[in-house]
Length: 437
Ligand code: XLS
Ligand code: NI
Ligand code: NI
Image (tube, rainbow, N blue to C red; front, side):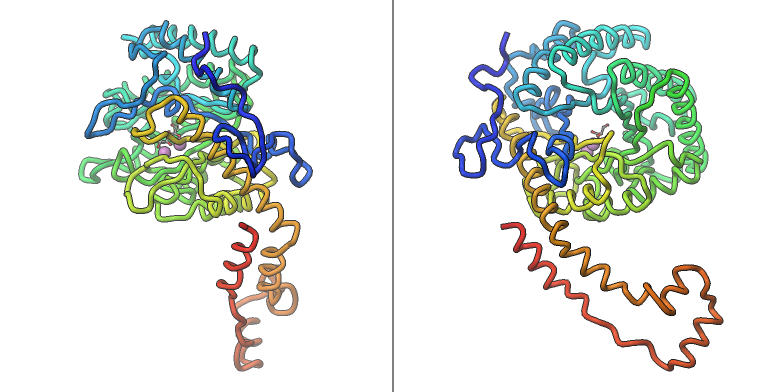
């Protein structure tokens, strides 16, 4: 059975093609800075938006036409979706996918039944992976859709719900391990609060720390070597999510003694909701040695929620790739399209247009960033800007030999600081535009 008839493997045809179902820039085996595009980008298709999205919103019913899907929660339907997913990912030529437990398999009436459903679909996923060579970038657990998680999962006030969440994550890590997943993501679905009047914030954060240590212990005990990742997000569904942004996550990791255990999966739309640029979040994670993976999408700056649109802006992807290349890539992480087509884009073929656009935008960002790096434009400027710290008084500050006394003496002798130099922001913005064309 073919679910996307008339669409073959998406070819690379180069920038001049007029074929909407071809890549203009993403050529998997093209070498950039000594590595293939496929290895730099490690693209992943997400199961939830792409194969479970319906196009419904708070104001309207589903719109997306998915002729293969009978809309039911049966195991048969779930099995069929596995075939749909792998046909799509294979035709697209993405090497990875990722999922939540409840995206792939229906939730049962009890935990035991849910686990059995998940095992049954894991069999199908495993067979499809073997058949196609497509690999699992990460698995995760949905700890936010079921009403039991209304107060949170690891940060709930209900100890039974904490136990349920623990059992669910235990199983999700095991399934991720079984499927050879190379990361495991914790997005804090409802880990946050709507009102501090009913919230013991300290207790909730302590519980989250306990939860993460137990998850780490379990992963070790079963031999799961994948990277744990927190996915920062400032709000939605709660008013305040504990994993607000990269800085809040890193502080939690430190407070909980989880350094070296958890890195970050940074998502563009979450960065902008937090009032940051994606480049800021990536750079903040990178300099702390915690840049693990990214959820590639984009928000709409005029809207205040997580619109999860496909990234098409090459200014954005260039900025992402500058930091990712400086990080030496993302492996074992990757570039996961946590993005959905608009509800007006209801044809199955729109899924191809969306992913092709995102992959091409990142491939262009990669090529532009590589050129900026090989010409040394930004690096040389930035290095020169800080040269007063390379010797003399600046060096004494950096190497720790300076004290307030020595600095005071230096300045009393000198009388006034050396004059400042221009930051040349506009010139650098012009330089970037030269490279974008
Ligand atoms: C929601 C998150 C979610 C995570 C996986 O905003 O982006 O989709 O990526 O749980
Ligand atoms: Ni995400
Ligand atoms: Ni999101």
